[in-house]
Image 1 (cartoon, helix red, strand yellow):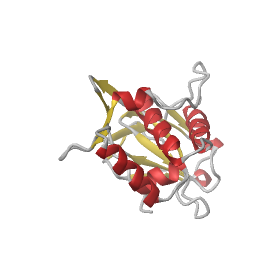
Image 2 (cartoon, rainbow, N blue to C red; image 1 turned 45 degrees about the horizontal axis):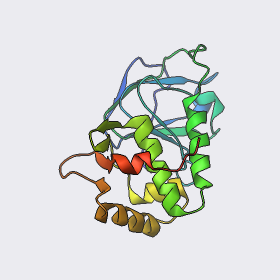
Image 3 (tube, helix red, strand yellow; image 1 turned 180 degrees about the vertical axis):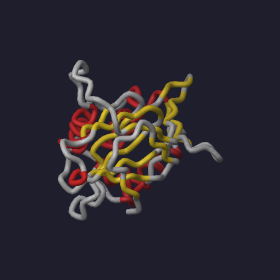
Image 4 (cartoon, helix red, strand yellow; image 1 turned 120 degrees about the vertical axis):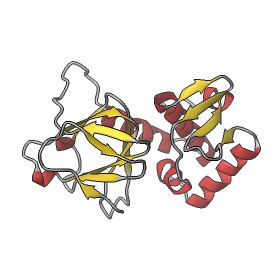
Length: 197
């Protein structure tokens, strides 16, 4: 894993290109840090060797990440799209909602569905419903996700993920437009996903 460290001092605006990652080292911060996404989509993951980059959450505009409640070895924030966030945010006590806990719970629920096909179906629906948008008969997800990452998220191998994605492609339910970094999914696929929440 390749990443740079988040500056120790709070910053009002940090920009990352898609694919770049910063690590938040909790030992360098007294009392933790509150990050807030200003624009873009990020993946939050644990960089520990034991968990091999386990995804904890996906964040979008307005979502906050309080780092004092996460792994003592640090956490990483990966830009899935062009990303802008701040590390000087004050925790918003009025929301009553912790996006990291909510994502972690939803991802755990997906992992407990019976088959890899159901888990992939539920994962794609969760990602589109939270981070995507509907455009007629299609739903757009503003980033692509690797077969390895899908395997990690649904508790399968990359080979299984590739087989399932190929099946969706051949059934005209998934498309990756050339030259774009987005993923298109049939609205009927998203609407028929198994419920996890």
